[in-house]
Length: 402
Image (cartoon, rainbow, N blue to C red; front, side, top):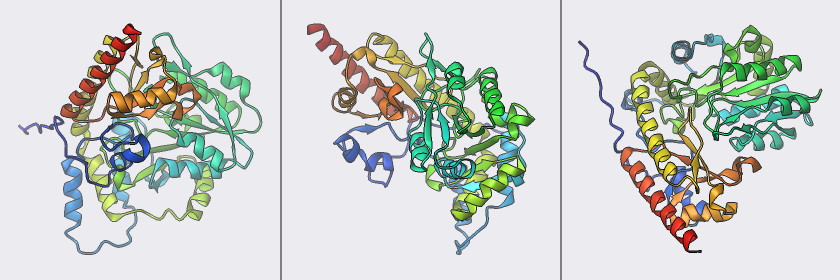
């Protein structure tokens, strides 16, 4: 019987004094190098050994030159997508990209013109805004609707009321960053119906699709129907799943030939080429060997989420944790603290010693919220909980005195 491999997420390598963005930018963003950074959406968890071993093996060859993205790498990814998410992409549907944001820019240029409207569903990952505006398109905001339990859903009536002939593209975040929703089939089908009726192309950012907690199930937008496949550009990759953002590799899947050709015209103008030879082997190794590791990682992440939820439950009048179905991003509703956004950010930095993403950066609907990345080791998560507990306790005492 094959021995089960054990994965340990109790500790992780220090990223201090490395070129890690979330650490090097602390002084600029938070005014202090002392804060624990919980903002950038990468993990303070070691990249899997099987990925690093594949890279080390490739380094046994002394030439690191131009290389094409190997067919075997895309085969590994499409096999993973079929097994894990029930969707079949062909290798010929796939494009290399160094990032989802880069892919989004190509999609905006390929499927809209200056002055056209592009739908974003706020609060949402900030590049969704910037990419639209930087390309001279009109930002069409369809804010998510918050339900009584704190979770979010689409506001279909708002969307219906705003669509017109200039609406060309919808940027879908699925699973959603920052609110942690894993969209249900019936929710996605309502979006699909409107997009089909109005000839709207869907760019579906599914980079967090592997980080979904049972019983929730990720449903790729392109898997909804044959018609959905024909209007969808899907962005996927290993960066979030296996903590490999530094390899600068992701992919785009476009089953429809006409959309693929329109995308490729802009893609070729940008000279994406094929990326790094080391990234290719890392990408393939992750998809070939990562299923068991991912299963253990998700157990660890969910335990961290439970710790954060327990803390927030203890300070329910001050702070609430939005229910999380996927991602490793905690969306904290801090409106009960009665602080302005700047004051709220300063509270986390100066009182808790934590560097979070300000909710308002995800759109005005994020005012009063903060985003906390809980993808850290058990040891670091215990520190996060202690720091936040002490800060909230002190704040409550001070509020009671006042």
